[in-house]
Image: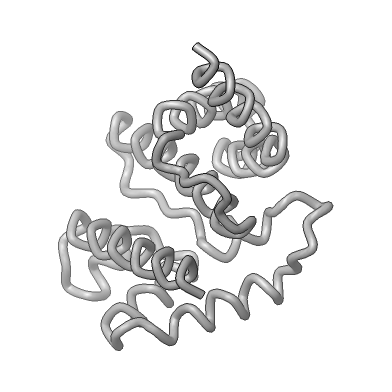
Length: 170
């Protein structure tokens, strides 16, 4: 019982730290539709709670922000698939630039961190990563690289995991 209370309290703190980021991502994704934005925010909170166990304790601030943004991105992609829309993509730089205003990381710091992390990738992974950082949808990336959208998403997950493991070891 105490474990559940601790988990809930930690989740509450996580949401409190990133409430502004989640709201901005949802506002951006809903194109300013207040009702849709509110729905997306709630779906993001639910997705974060359902996957909370995948967030390791004591991660770096940037990793925590990336995890939150990735949960939101998953909600947006799932919603688009349900509606039959083409694959969505939130530009990675934009996700990470939307860190709360009180953060010490500037957009330049985030870009430099991403550039540094990209050096560990193979040339093929680096190309896909650079397209992820631009405003290309998963479908557009697939078309450019001659791959299926599902394959692109699998490669994206592998790249994110590789970068996460590398940054944890630093």
